[in-house]
Amino acid sequence: MTAFTHLDESGAARMVDVTAKQPTVREATASARVDVSPRVMGALRTGTVPKGDVLAVARIAGIGAAKRVPDLLPLAHTIGVHGCEVGLSLEEDHVAITATVRTADRTGVEMEALTSVTVAALAVIDMVKGVDRSARIREAKITRKSGGRSGEWARPAD
Image 1: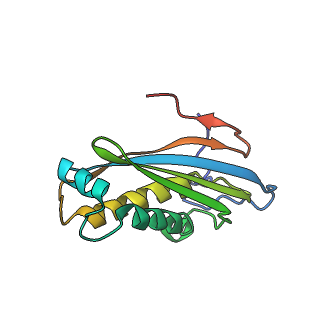
Image 2 (image 1 turned 90 degrees about the vertical axis):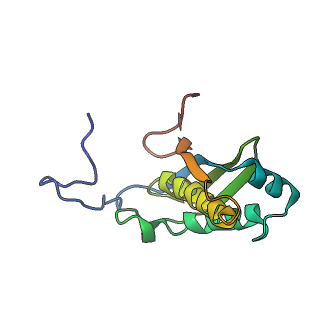
């Protein structure tokens, strides 16, 4: 088993020093879903959610969140988020969310992608909670990444 890089020799938490690493192009994609009631799905499809354009608000929230990861995760590095695409689609019984984040930096963007979809999902909940208090976030996960020392990785099909 690999040693935990965020722990020093005595077991104390530490920020990994990436000073000597060379910047490389890196990309990560994450996904999440928000389960909502049929009533909310109908309102989303017709654009009649009382708070407004749910998908636009969630998209902007997700992009903003990707840029704020070091403020939220104490051991995360401040990196340049050079690209962030957040997609939302209306499925049969849920809102599907994906985010792809790109950088040319010393460390990966997995946490940025995961934070992006999670905050986008929170924005959906915030926008629909007046109509559906039972809405819930499920299956936030990294689906693929590329670049860096570990190279390419894709989550196997469920």
